[in-house]
Image (cartoon, rainbow, N blue to C red):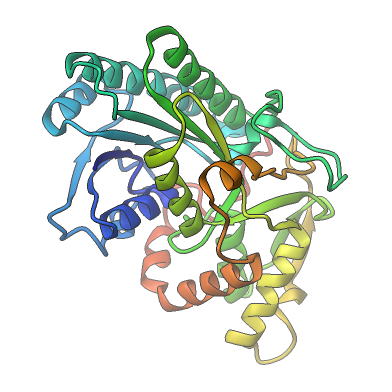
Length: 349
């Protein structure tokens, strides 16, 4: 299969690219190389004859049309997006332009290509989204997001992703474009851009900095190891039912405080301080505006229909992640000077 992956130099996209090439798929990596992208993320497969890179912004419709015509993909995996909630609070415009208008451009370019190719039955447009479109859940562990949960986005980021999800469904219903959709829980793992919680904690701990916890740390997230997520995404694009959505979860709910404490304990073991614990650096800060209390995914559909489950617990995945950051200092140090990294964002509400 030849797969066009948008955002393939980003965190989740690069995991998809690496795994797809390893499994023998031809991959065209389409990425604008904005601040959070890094071609080092795909270095392990960049020399493969199965890999091609195209530097294209999904807001550029003409470039997208040319890319489809040039490469004639069998499937699209659309991951390109602005994704940092705090940045969306400070500057929502980029999220509207990329996540909504960019997705519209991708849908129209894909539809044009698909129609001109004779509407091949095997073609797929896989839209990758987030569980944040569903809003916030109560603390009751019996209540989880399902594929039928009504949308209730609470941030500019989640609202833009909800909008893109609706566009994809509309293009399937209105034009017959063969689509599949997935909504995932919080990802973590190797190559995670150092403005997100897990790398912020790892790198801040190593630097001896305060480890900021929003509010009282009681906000709950379901944590999904990025390489497990990539495996699920490839399964959905290959075997998912057209027009169907699948929730992908890690089956690992933790409060933010529990997560940070787990990372500190792993660091205590792998890179012990001269005295004390990294947990001594935990600092509680003012909460983020509109901070959702809990996300949790019911993964029954993807488990029952496609036979997929995550392969690691959050403790196992975090241990692998911490080890990767300890072994790849050159990678993350090169990214720390990029705009906004290391600064508190999202407080302008």
